Amino acid sequence: MALSVEIVYTVKDSTPKGESQMSIFVPVGLTNILSYLEVARSFVGFADFLVSGKFLGIAEICFGVDISGLANNTLDANSDVEEIGEFIFATEDNNPVIVNVPAIKEDIVLANSHQIDLANANVASFVTGMTTGVAFQPTDIGERDIVNLRTATERFRNSGSTK
Amino acid sequence: MARAVSIVVNVVDAKGKASKTRIFAPTTMTVAQVQTWGVAVAGWIADLSQAQVTRVSVCLPVDITVGNTLKTVANALSDVGQKALFIWNSVLAGFKLKFNMPAFDESKITANDETVYQADAAVAAFVTAVETGFSTTNDGTVYITNSRGNNVDTLDYAVEKFRNI
Figure 1 (cartoon, rainbow over the protein chains, first blue to last red):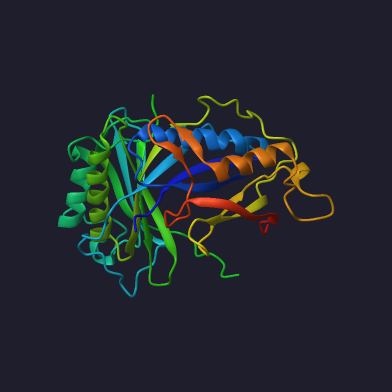
Figure 2: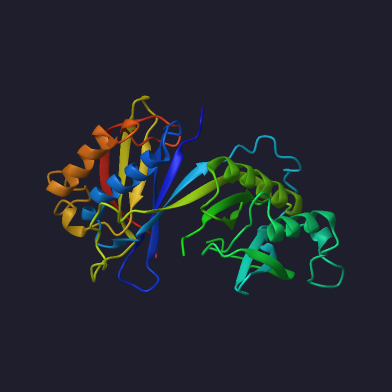
């Protein structure tokens, strides 16, 4: 069974931070990418009449990637997504691009420091991939190429209430 | 400046708590390149994280204003915490599609009731469109599906819901 393709819409209300998302699914087997665009646009054309908020003009069409062959994809008993590796890259025009890696491995953080060990082979591989690319150059949200790493540090997200 | 393609990597930790990270790529890539890139990114995250990668998605931005005249300003009393929950039957009995529509228009709720007013013209048009599918240039009529890929068939029910504040 193939997973469906997800179309994600964002709806904003009249408050400054009032934003929510809704998703619909469409089949994976469509022959043409234009079909996904047409469904995304047709659906919202009807849905817009039903909401008192406003749809953002950009939606996202999300295709699943097969990760069944992924190596090292094991769950550590001490893993905690609130412990984050914060990698701050920079684009060619020096705009920062932050990539957070949740549940960063403790053994790639330098002892008695919050600095991530850039000499670690896995870290080096990630940084090289992000700054030199794999067949193309990773970018920021505005498609400006990422060209270097500024900092890489461990951060902690506040624990949320359990209530 | 175009908005880039996103690769979203979802992970879960030992507490069952989920998180995700997002990396961008140029829209000039082919779909095959993006898929390859998605696997590469997932591999890096798996190597750096103690959590388990559960899902990777490649998300393409799409301008939904093309062919539509969407509202440009939210109504003054709109609230994304006020939703309509739509439950749809699929062609596979018992496997349904559920989605919430945030900031649902209060005028389309039946008076003194929680049900979505299906006799409203806009609601009826929406339900008919979902039930009969959407016309496409190259793939004929396309139905939305549940997450398992089963085409949506008919509306089961639709009611108003409120998100906790």
